[in-house]
Image (tube, rainbow, N blue to C red; front, side, top):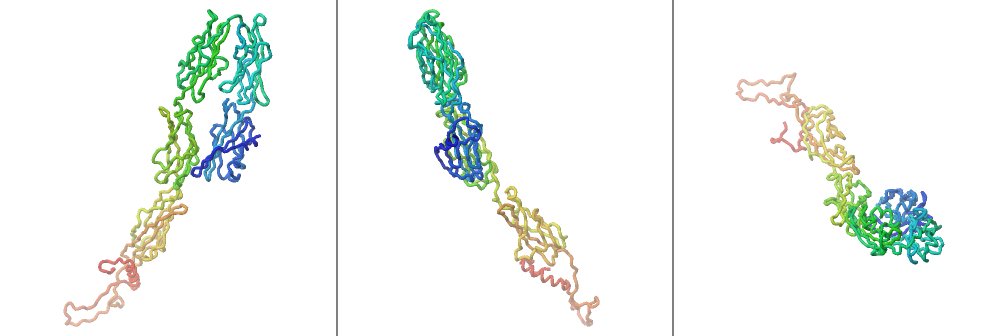
Length: 617
C-alpha cells in the first residue's frame, strides 16, 4: 500500500535561484504504518541517480521535533522511521501533514516535501456514560426535539461518526444534524403525544456508528422519564447569540448575558442555566456560565491561533425539569501576541575568504502564528556586512554572500537576523549566526626591508651567524609558514655560495669559511622567503655583505735589492751636495700579495666603488 501511495507524489511548484533549487513534493500515506514502510522515492521524484546521494551529503531537515520519516542513502527511498498516530499529531483537524526539507550539497539543492497523513478507522465511537436520563413533561407537543449526548470519535472525515440510530419505539424518532465543525449530533424527536398514566418512562438504546470500513459503533442507554404537567418550557431571547472578544481578554471579563423566560408561574418559572453536553471540555475551561444570572464570562487564556470561534450550546431548565436551548457563538479577535519565529538550517558555518558572491551559507524559515497584518513578517540583516537574503519561497530565505571576504580583516561574522511583524505595536525576534571565514593563501611573505647591509670583520670564525632576515605572512597555518632560501647571486658580484649558508626556518645567515679582505671585500646575496601554501607565494630581499679590513699583513722592502738581509750601497763622492739622492726605497707587499692586489683591484673596478683619489691603498 505504501508503494502505491508513493506513486501519488505530485509537484506543487519549482523555483530555482542561484543554483539552489526549491520545490515541494507531496506524498499521501495512511497513519499507523509500521517502521520501514515506503513513503516514496526521492531519486525518482528528483530525477537523480541513486549513486549521487552518498556523494552529495543528503539529509532530511524536519519541521517537527520528531523524525517520523528517514531516507535510505543507497536507493533514495523515504521510509517510516516512527509510527504516526494522526489523532495524536493533528487531533481532529480536517487536514494533517508533516513537512521537511531534503538538503543536497555539491551543488547545493533544497526540496521541500509534505507528507499528508490520511486517517484510518482505528478508533471506535464512545459515549462518556453507559446511561443518560431525560426528563420531559407529558404535555410536551409532538415535534419537540430533545438533544442527546453525543458520542466521541477521534477519527476524522468518513471515519468519524456518520450517523445515530435509536431503538424502535412508538413515540420517539431521531433527528441527526451536522454541526458547523462537521461533527454529527442527535436529537430525540417526539413523534406521538405522551401519556404518563400509561407509561412513565421509556428505555431506549442510542447507537453511534462511524463511516469507516469496516464500520465501528458504540451504544448507550437513554432513559426518558415522563413528568407531570408543566406546560411551558423556557424560551431564550434568541436561538443564536453572536459576540466577539479580544484573544487577550482577561479572566473574569463578561462575554454575554443570556436571558430565557418561562411563561409558567412560581417555582415552574425558576430557571437554571448550564452548558449542554455538546460543549467541549476545552470550551468549558475557557468560559463559565453563571447558573443563576446567565452571564458567560472568560475563565481561561484565549488564543486566536488555537481557535477562531467557540460554539457554546446552552440550556435553561426549570425545576421539573423542562428545558429551553440556544447557541452562543463567541468569535475571537486576533491581537499581536506572537513574535515571529526564526528557524535556521546551516549549510556551512565556515566560508573560504575567496568565496564567490552568491555562496549559500544557510536557509532561514520565518513564521508568525498571528493572522492578517499581525502575521506578516519582514526579515532583515544588519547593514555593512557582505551577506544578503535571497527569497526562496513564501517566508523562506537563503543567506548568501554578497561581497568580497577578507579573513585578515574580518575572520568572524556574528550575523544578526531580525524578523519583525507588521502588528501594532510590532514584535520582533533576533537570531544570530556565527560564520567563520577560512584562510586561503592570498598573501605573500613580506621582509621588513627590501635590502640589508651587513658588515663582517675579516678573519671571522666559520659557522658564526652574521645576520638574520625575517619575513612575515598574515595567512594562517601552512599558508603562513615561511621558509628561506638563497638564490643565485647577481652577476656583478662574486659568488657567495662557498662562504655562507642560510637556515631554512629561522632565516639565520651563517658563515661557512673565514673571510679575507685582501681576497673579497663585498658580495651580494638574494634571499627568497616563500610560504607553505599551494601554490606557494614568495618575495625576495637583497643582503649586501661588506668585509671589513684588519691589520693582518706586515710591510716588506722591495727596492733596493737586499743581499743577506743587507742592501748594496753605492760609495759617494766627497763633493756630493746635501740633498743628493743616494737610493730609493720601495716598501710593498710580497709577490703573492701583489698578485692578490691585482685581483682585488679588478673586483673594485667591478664594484665601481673607488676612493676619491681613484686608488686603493
